[in-house]
Length: 141
Length: 332
Image (cartoon, rainbow over all chains, first blue to last red):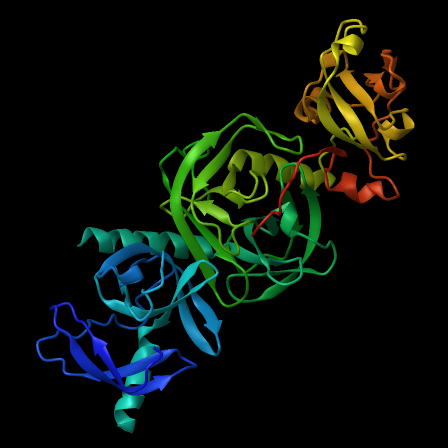
C-alpha cells in the first residue's frame, strides 16, 4: 500500500467504498483500513492451532487485475520466521495482486493473509498475528 | 464430513506420521539437508548434500541435535549413510515394496533445522527402469515425481497417503528434477555401506568424450570400429594413466566389446560384472594418424582404498570416468 489517507475498496458485492488507513505496520507488513462494512460478511477465522503441515489451503485474490482467482496447494511449513514474525509457507502459486488476500483452509476459514512470495512459496501472515494487530489498532483509535 | 476437509486431514495425518523419523543432517555450510532414520541408529541421506566427513550432526524430530559418524557414501547412487544414537525417536515404517504406481499420491516430508518439518505434495509421474545412473550404478527403478522441490528435498523420504516410506528423494540423479530411489536400492546400498564403507566399482581415471571414428582409421582395426571414446584427461596416477592411455587416444573397445558412449564403458566396469582387475582395452592412437589395436597393459583396477588424492574419489564411489557434458548444479 503506497497511499496514506484515502483508498478505495471493492468488495464481493460489486460496490466501491472509500476507506481510511487507520493503522499500518511495515515490520509485520499489515495495514488496517476503516470502511463502511454495511451489508458485508466478516471473515470466518479458523481457530488457532488447527492448521498443520500438509493441510490443504487456498489463496483468493486479484492477481494481474483478475478478481476472485483461486489457487490451491498444501501447507509447506509452519515454523518459518522472518523479521521476528512467524509466517505460514504454502505450496500455492501466488502472483502480484494476491498480496493482502486471504489464505483459507479446506473449510473456507481464513488462516492467514498472503503477504509475499518467499523462495517460490506463498508466505502468509498467520490469522492470530493479524488479530493481534487489529486489536492494537482498535485500542489505539 | 466434507471431502475436502477429509483429504486435508489425511494429508496432514500422513505428514505428522512421517515427521517422527525425518531428521536434519548438518554436513555442509548454510542450510542442512534432510535425512531419514531408516533403521535404529542408522540415518540415510543423499551423497551430494554431505560436504564434510567430520563433525556431522543430526537434528531429530524431538529437537535434539546428536553427533553422527559417516558409515559410507556412494556417488553413483547419490546415497550416504550415517550412524547415530537413535534412541528416543522411532525408525521409519515402510510401505510394501513394489506397491507404488504412476499416479499414486505422494508426499515429501523434510527437515532443515530444529524449528519444525515441511512437506510437498504431488503424484508419481513416471517409473523408469531398469536404469543406469549417470555415474554408473545399475538400479532397478527410479520414480520421477510431479512435485515441487524446496529446501530439504534431497535426503527426505517419499511417503504414501498413509505416511509410510516408499522411497528416498534426490535431485541429484536426473539433472536437478525431482526423483526418488525405491526401497530396494536404498536397502541394498545401505547394507554394502554399513558392512564395507563403500561400493567397489572399477576405476579407470580418465575423462572421455564419445566420437565417431573416421572410417579410414576405424576400418583398419580388426574388427573394424566406428565409434569410440576420446581421452581428454588422464590421471597419471590411475590405472588408465599407468596403463599407457594418453590424451587423444580413442578407446574403441573394452573386453572386446565396442564402446559408443561413456555409459557403455561404465557398464563394463560395473561391480556386477565381477572384479575389474586385468581387463584389457583396445585403443586407437589417433594422434599418430594410425590405428593399432594395443592392449592398455595389465590394467590393475584397484578396488581397495589407497593413500593419495584418489582415495577420497574412490571412497565416494566415483569411478573416475567423467563424461564431458554440463552437469549443472545439484539443488536442494
